[in-house]
Image (cartoon, rainbow, N blue to C red; front, side, top):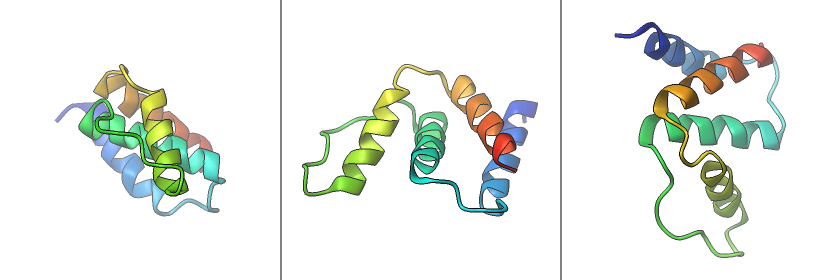
Length: 84
């Protein structure tokens, strides 16, 4: 396993034990980078305006579209490290 993958998996575990809960914009960034790293570009239709949470998640994920899995993993690791 690559060192980046190991660092990413450690950051995922660390994200569940942060000293304080990040604000919503940071949580969306964490979510979008995780999804981009593990699943690639967002697919499907954007949720309707009645699903505000789903829509925010979709938009955050779409904002990192085109980023490689390795780039998203590194950004995720860096973000979690900055929150510790």
